[in-house]
Structures are given as C-alpha cells and as structure tokens.
Amino acid sequence: MVLLQALSSDNNISMVLFFGTIGMLALTIGLIVFISFHQRKVIRYQQQLQRLEQDQQKTLLNASIRLQEEERQRIAADLHDDAGPLLATARLYLNENFVNLDKQTQLQSIYNAKQIIDDTIQLIRNISHSLMPPTLKNFGLESAVNDLFQKISGSGSMNASSRFHDYRERLKTENELIIFRVIQELINNILKHSNASFIHLTQNTSGQRFFIRIHHDGRGLTQADFDKLGKSNVGLGLKNIQSRLKVLQGKIFFEKDMSQTYYKITVELSREDDLKATG
Amino acid sequence: MSVVIDILLATNNRASSHRFSLWLFMDLFELTCLSIYFYFILNSKRQRLLILTLYCIYLIFFVILLKLNSDEYKSTSNAIGSLMVLTLSIYYLINFSVKSTGSESIMSPNFLIVVALMLNVSSTLFVSLISNNLTESELSKYWYITNIAVIGTNILISIAFVMQKYRKIPSPNGNQNVDFTFPDDR
Image (tube, rainbow over all chains, first blue to last red; front, side):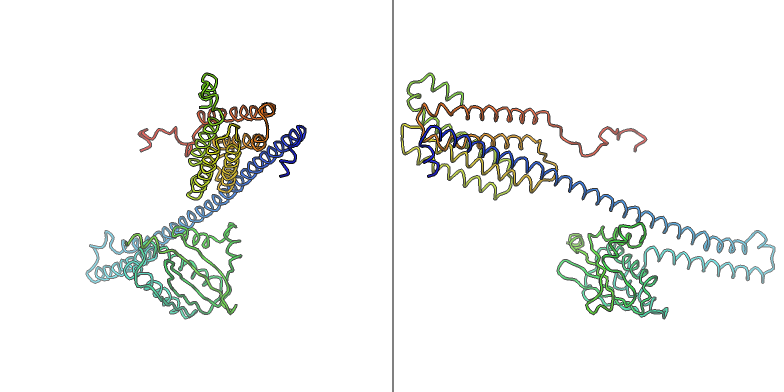
C-alpha cells in the first residue's frame, strides 16, 4: 500500500526505485561481503585446528618412536649383558681343553654348562614373555590381567585385584595386546608415582562400547593434569597410552571418583572394529 | 533464447502482438533454467525439496497470470521469480558459509554465478514490482536499470565460465613428479 501511494507522482516513482534498488543492492553486497569474511575466518580456524592436530600427531609419533627405541635398547641390553656372558661362560666350560680333562671334571663342566644354558633359556623366555605374554596370547585379556595382578599382589607391597563383568567374547589379538599394554603402562605409573595401597580393575561393556576402569587410593592424575602432560615434552608413557588408544579410537579419562577419595582411570573403546572382523 | 524471442518479435507481426505472453514464457524458461542450476549446486534433499516447492508455487502463479489474458505486461511473474532466485541464492550463501571446508573458495565459479544472480535480482526487483503500475513510456524510462543489471550479470557469469575453464584442480600431494619406476626406488 505504501508503495502504491508512493507511485502517485513521477518523482516519487524515481525516489522509490532509486532508494529501493540501492537498498537492495547494499543489502546484497553486505551479505556477500559478510559471507566472504566469514568463510575466510572459518578456513583460518580449520587450518589452525589442522595444524594443532598435526602437532599432536607428531608428538605422539615421536613418543612412540622413542618408546620403541627404549624397548629395543632394553632388549639389546638384556641380551648383551645377561645372555651374552652366560653363553660365554658356558663356552668356557666346553673349551678345547675339555677333552683333556679327567672324567669327573668333564661331568662337572657339562653339568655347569647345562645349568648356564638353562638359565639362558629362562632369560630368553622372560624377554620373549615381556614382548608378548603367552597368557594373553593363549587365554585372553582377562587371564593376562589376572596374571599381572597376581604378580603385583604376590610382591606383598600392594593389593591388586581385577574383575571382568562382561568378557564372554575375546577381542582381536592385536587389540587385546594394545589394551594390555595400556593397562600395563597405567599400572606401572601407579606403582611408580602414586604410593597406592590397592588397585582394582573392572571391565564392562555397554552396547558397542568396552570399558576398563582402574581405581587406586594413591596420588593420581586429573584430566587437566593429563592434558597438560600430553602437551609437554615429559610424560612419555602417557603419550604412548594416547598413541595406542588412537589406534583403537579409544578415549581415556582421569578423574576422582564420586567419594573424592580414590582416583579412577576410565578407558573407553569401541567394539565396532572387532565385530566387523568377527562378523 | 532471449535473442530468438527478440528476433521473433522484430520480424513477426503476430508474435509482436503477443509479446507480453512471450515475455511471460521467457520468464518461465529463465526460472526453469535457474531452478535446474540451483538443483545441481545444492545437494541435500531438503534443499532440493525447497527448490521444487518454490518452482511449483511459481508455476501456480504462472498459470493464474496466463489465464488473466491481459494485454498489458504483468511483471508479477518476474517479481515472484526474482524473489525465488533471491531466496535460493541466500540459501546457497548461508549453506556455503556454514558448510565451508576450504575446498570451495569464494573465488569458485559457482559462488561468482550466484553473486551475479543475486546482484541482478536485487537491482531489478523494484523495477519488476512497480512496472505493473507503469505505462509503456514510463517503463522504458526506467528500463536502463534492467539493462545495466543484465550487462553486469553477464560480465560476472562470463568471468565465472573463464574461471571454470582455467581452474586448477589441486593435486593431493606434492610428489607427483617422483618417478616410482626408477629401479633404486623398488
């Protein structure tokens, strides 16, 4: 109606047309400029996120490589410092003069060499077990964790217990190994830093999600501490946990429990990958 | 199509006497092309449903205007078409800004075409709205706005087509030149 009244004279038509068109154009140009700037801002933000993610990946990769190197050095040291001298000693018992010795001394040398070779076999078995625990391979995660906790409890310094509520179907072997390594690393940290008197591990599932929860009564980490350590150069073990969980698309949460007395660590994993493999 | 209609109007008396109906059909053709264009650049089902709904509404108005059978040019269909194009353009731009991933830049041909359409429609919308109330001589006085808008739009669309032709598809990574067949690489 306003428009029609405005059309009463030629001058008014020109005015309405001029202001209407200019107004519409201004609005359109304004919208286009706004969207252009907004898009630039979004792209800049996405690039920043990508950079942060790349940095995080790089830190995790470096941590993983360093840990791998440390592991190799440990194995090399075990082989060089323990297995090497043992085998050299066994060789000494069975040297060139062996045939010239009297029968009694020969038997003693053979016995000593056998003892040393047995020790070497045990040592190599221990190294092998530390790389891939046979209980885990043969009987699964539940047995391996129970085994580990029995050893801790057996030492008498700490009470360690575990309970698996829903573990009827085993996960893929490689996934079980990753979870076991994460648990080992967490337990190792608790033993080293927390001064706890007990550790309790529970396992449960909810739909497609698989949970591992560890409670302890010592000094623990909160999520803020964990995030802070994740960004710094220290906390190699925690970074290793992060990189292992990334493989399983898992998450880890560090917090105090409801009573604010105990610390709890929750590892949450998706079982979809496993179901796909078995299905 | 526009050129064909202009030639037809200039050479054929019968066509010239029905020029307003021909313009109406020209509007329909234009809007159909634009709807198809938006249908292709907007991908989600909801967006496509919106395009179809708006097009159906336009068709209803088109039939009503055609049945009026007036000798005067009814710019209502053009105004409705302009509003529809404006709505779809704004929808595209909002969608563009929300779902922007960086892969589709503001310098992409589609963005430029939509900007050209928006500028055209927003500058000619008021002429379309009031031209129903104008006589033919008054209309010709303000028709230069439409001409300028069309020229500007055509220039922008031409730039968009040139950009499309010389557009570089980004390579996924920088080692395209490595000769993997070199024996030492095996």
